[in-house]
Length: 283
Length: 283
Image (cartoon, each protein chain N blue to C red):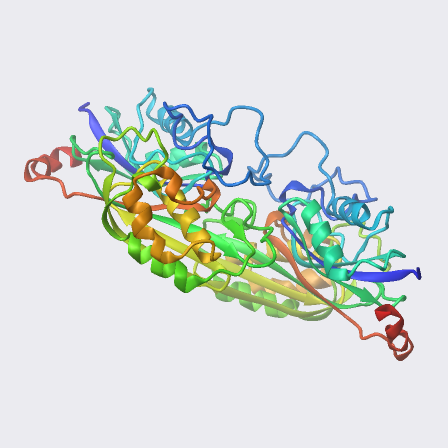
C-alpha cells in the first residue's frame, strides 16, 4: 500500500507527563523560575505525550512510527489543540476507526481529537503559520481545590488595567530576547506577537497570546512579567525598556507551566501540486 | 480558656482520598457497582479528608481534635460545601487566622472555605435540615482529558426528556429501599426527595438532588438508573414499580463516585438559648 501521511489534533492534561517530548537541552538550571509550587513531583521519570501517543497509534497500525509534533510543550503544560503528523502504509484502516482505536489505548488524560489524511509534504512544524496559547490564572483569595494543576493561583488583588496596558505594549514585531529563556538556540529572537490580551470571567484571568513563532518559555516569562506589573512592582510603561534591553534579567519571573494551554495551531493551505494528489488519498 | 465549638465549610477534590472517613461497614462486596473506571487505583491506603483536615487544624491549635463531618462522602466523591465541627479551648486565635494557617498546611485539593464560632450545641450531623448533591456527566463522543476524575463520561446519545420525566417521578416522599445499597443500617428507608432535576450546559449534564436525608449510595443509584432510562433500556414509567418493589435489584447500576459533588448543607437556626450565649464567643 502507498505511504500515507496523517495529521492529528491532540488534547492533553500535561500534569502527569514530562512534556510533549524529552528536551535535548539540559533542563537542570531554572534560575528564572517562580517559587516551586506545592504540586507533587514524581520521583520516577514521567512518560512524554509523544511516546504515549506514538505507542498507542503504533499498536493499531501494527508498526513503530515517528510522531512529529508542532510544539514541544514543557512538562506540566496542557494542550487543547496540539498538532502532529506521522506516516503509515497501513491505509486500509478508515481514519476515524484508527483514531478511536488509538484513543481506546490511551490514558484518560490524552485525547486524539481528529485524525485525517494529509498531503505527503504536510509538516506539523514547517507548515505552521500561527499559534495561540492561553494562560489561566485563578485570581481569588482561596485556592480552587478542583483546578490546582490546571491554573496558576494568585491570591493578591491585581491591577487589571495595568496588565492590559502592558500586554498591549508587547504586541507587534519585537526582539523578544528579554522574554526568552537563554539557550533557546534560535539565531534571531525577533518575533511578531499578533495578539496579547487579557480577559476575565469572574476569578479566572486569561491571557491569550498569538504569534507565528514563540521562543522557549516566552509565554510564561510574559505572564510572569505581566503579573509583577499587576502587583504594582513595576509600571506597565517599563515594557519598551525591557524589550530594548535584550537581556533576560530585565523581564520578570517565569510563570509556572501548569497555567499554560496550547489552544490551536493554524497551518498554511496546501499548494496546488499537493491538492492535485488528494484523490490518491481517497482511493 | 472556655471550650469553643467551631463550624467549618470544606471543599475538596476526592480523587486522592479514601472518602471523608474510613467506613465502619465492610467495603469489599460491590456487586451493584458500574464497570471499573480506568482511573488509577492506588496500591497504598489513601488518607481520608477527615484525618487530613483534623491534622492540619490540630497543628495550628496545638492539640489533637475530633472533627465531626455532616456527610460521610465515599472515596472519589467531591465536595464544595461539606460541613464539620470541632471543639478547642485555644480561642485566642482569630477564626480567620486559624482558617488560613490550616489551609496553608493542607494539600492543594482540600480547602477550608469558612471557619466560624458556633453555639456549643451545634452538631454538623444532627442539625442538618437539607443537603444538595450534584452529579456531573460529560455527555460527548470524546472524553474530556481535563476532567477525567471530575465527571462521568457517557458517550452515548441520551434521551434527556425521559431522564427528566423519571427524575420527576422520584421527587416526593418514598421508601427508597430500591435505591440504597443494602446494609445502609437505617431503620427506615423512607425519605423525602425535595428535588431531583436535570439541567445541562452544552455537553455537561447535571443532576441535582436535594433531600433532608440520603441513604447509602442513593444519589449514585438514582443517577445510574436515570442513565439506563436515558439509554432507552427501560422506560421512565418504570420508576413507581421500582420504588414499590423495595428491592435493590429492581433499580439500575450504581454510577461511579467521581461525578458526584456534595454542594451544600442547610442547618436549622440556633435556638434562642444558644443565641443568648453568643456574646461569650466574642469576648
